[in-house]
Length: 180
Image (tube, rainbow, N blue to C red; front, side, top):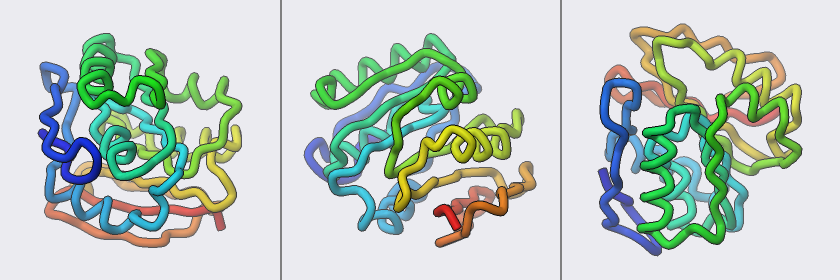
């Protein structure tokens, strides 16, 4: 896995060992970043269920101001820290070892882009989206980028969101949401 574009284009990223982390495929990541390009510059990014941190680091590489990486796995946190340091984004990054729902409850910051890519089998989508709304984690003009397996997950989106874009890449579904 690598960074596709921007300041650290081509940087190879470490990924956590095991089956718990499922990296976003390069072709899907490239498509996602093409869709959200207008939102990236000077944005504040939240990478929930961050895994390797690839989505947040890609955002920083393309001009985001800052990124917060959240994951509950110690292996993932080690990878994220290593990847952030390799990219030299330590001064604009915050890495938090906490489960995403707890983070959303405690968070006081608003983000312009929130990446939501939880483990498919745990079906954390609805809880996470509700937590984003309840705790005002999304800025007024912000977006949520949701990645899911459309063969395993039935995505339920709270009524407070509108779908800006929706694409499918094989089994992988991408939905970009904004407050309605």
